[in-house]
Image 1 (spheres, rainbow, N blue to C red):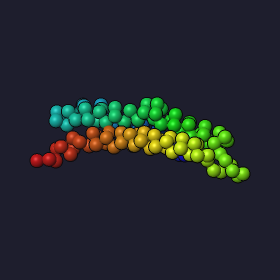
Image 2 (cartoon, rainbow, N blue to C red):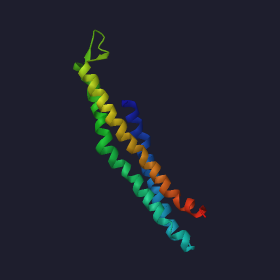
Image 3 (tube, rainbow, N blue to C red):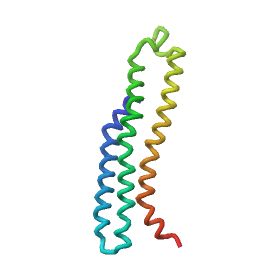
Image 4 (tube, one colour):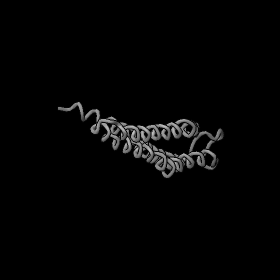
Length: 131
């Protein structure tokens, strides 16, 4: 889990910000299009960019603290039992599972926001194809 959080900080966060910036630039360029119907779609790209930017604060406020909690639990040797110190005590197991449940729920929101942003960005093209 610690390695996954480290890689997410290296790759996902900057990539997310880059795509949000690209969507903002797309909104700006689209707003200058010569066709008024096409120029009106800039709002969708701007909304998609705004939606994607929400991932950063969501991660920082809700997901990263849970990652830190996992690291703290790993470093707390009182949580472990047995001669080889590889097995969690029952109360630590319960705490770990509850924390993992919260982590999964919050990651669900984190994963859904880019999907929502993508759907917003492509919605004008989808709406144009409808009869």
